Image 1: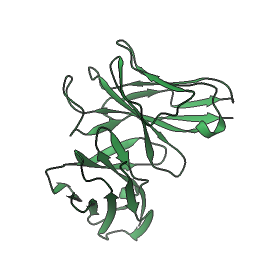
Image 2: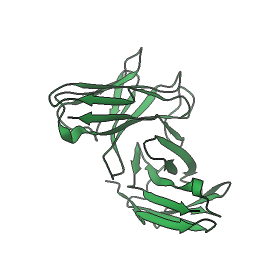
Image 3: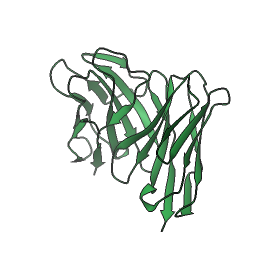
Length: 109
Length: 119
């Protein structure tokens, strides 16, 4: 059974810092890995999707990497802004999507 | 949310009542996932449906919970005889692929969720 773990559970940084969020999964036989953002009381917004054959994806200040052999993914956020404050969830795609518990990010002005 | 619609946005029920949650995926799309998010926890997969078929219900509780996605109309997640532990946010999601293609390797788009509160 696939298990997805995210570390840290919460992170607070000053504005402008670069930061890394971590995601690990137990079963490397995946189709894809997806990073989402969730704002309080809202649904999820897809940020980046990495296919199983890919190693990374970039969108603006976001870069996500995937290492299937070690069961790890990282989400790198450059030059963080207060508007980046949210919970970030990674999800591993198999026949369905299995989610980690998320990292709650706070970027202080 | 790419057009994934959920209603109601908030639902309050007393213990023992029934809760019906609705989800309409992007128009013309035929795959729907349901997830539950308990307070301070991640999303838990419940069920994956295609039109008129349940593909994977491995995350559904054995009792009181059921889901359907009829040929016409939205997908329905039904919870009978609700208990306080059912209080959670329920999200549905639809893959971004065009109709007729499989759901893998595609972005998932989520609805805004239904917040169920059981008194």
